[in-house]
Amino acid sequence: MPDGLLPLGVVLSSFVPGLAIFFLAEARHRLRSALNLAGALTKLALIGVMLWGVLHDRDYVFSHTVLPGLDLVLRADALAMLFVSLSAALWFFTTLYAIGYLEGSPQRSRFFGFFSLCVTATMGIAMAGNLFSFFLFYELLTLATYPLVVHRGTEAALRAGRIYLAYTLGGGALLLVGTAWLYALAGQVDFVAGGSLAGLPEEAAGRLRLVFLLLVAGLGVKAALVPLHGWLPVAMVAPAPVSALLHAVAVVKAGAFGIVRVVYEVYGVEFAQSLGLLVPLAAAAALTIVWGSLRALYQDDLKRRLAYSTVSQVAYIALGAALFGPVGTIGGVVHLVHQGVMKITLFFCAGNYAETLGVHRVDELDGAGRRMPATSVAFTVAAFGMIGLPPLAGFVSKWYLGLGALEAQMPWVLAVLAASSLLNAAYFLPVVHRLWFRPRAGPWPQEHIRARGGWETSRLLLVPPLATAAATLGFGLFAAGSASPLDWAKLVAAREYLQWVP
Image (cartoon, rainbow, N blue to C red; front, side):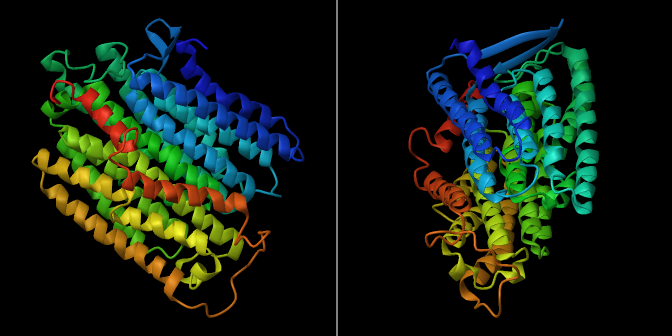
């Protein structure tokens, strides 16, 4: 396959199976699963080829002119490949999990069709080569995820869908206005290491500040920055695979990734700093980190507690982007991956408790560690990673963010990180205590025997969280190794800060 078609192939590897799945009868579950897994494995193979090429400075660019001055561009650069690799790997595990989770459920063809379109949009967002292409896939993601949020068709699900659309379409409108205004000022806005706007005249500075506000507000809806986060906890009525997708792979990551692109490759971090844009962004991220953690403390529903944890944790990515220096960039970019594997583990485990034991609330988890030890080990590892305990992945992210705060001469960020870790411990450790140290005082709310051969639950529900929990440990233990997420984040920072990094 020619190099220029590889990015397109990555997008089509989920788009084509998704279209085919829509037309499958519900009874064709084997063929549906085969199409899903074939698409996921094909995507991983294509990404593997591009990872090797990008590491060796090879260019992979697909471009198609839509209108004069508007090109649809897919480009595989170092930052894109970090997000693409995360999304593709977690899509594979989420597909396995969803096949087991939805076994026997109605409307599976519709679910997996939109599920594949959601991943297609995420791939397009990751590899978009300019702001126009990013916007197209960003809005496709909104349309593809809405049917997943309302999949169960209950009144609560439909209400959550309405709230989700109100927030995300409003954010999309802000992003559209900001994009159109920026194109009017600068023409086609490509994503370029170091930024593409630094050559604009000084008299445009005021307008560029307003455009930045529009872009970050539009992206901040999906990134769940306070006060734009209200849709996320409500959307937890969706099935567990959808929650995992929203929090770890697609929607919130798309918003955070977009903020990174705008700061580094539209404005350029040096230009953004000169306009006075980074400190307000850091303040908004810090507020979100603390507020999300405080709200998580008071949630009895397990998935809502995890949702507010996401509000807090994803803001670390925006915080890293706002720290003026390569070390902070490394911390924010690597957290894009680390938060994904930790949070998807937690949602997989929450889904296992719900589907196997009928447990949805924190106060119902007493003794679950003895009944479901493998699931509970995975949950514990991911929870400790979120707190930031060494040697897990979350510790690596927070270490580099702390060093980056000192490099940027913003020591107040250390207090935010410390407060966040203490609050993380305050809302995760009680869950872990209930799992392992509180005896069961009665029957489970609604126990389902889903396992065969002595497994605590279906293997398709158990293997994904064990694999991602292992990644949470491995990304921390082997952070210094070549080709680790941290090593790749350093490559991204070196390319973005080319004139400052030796």
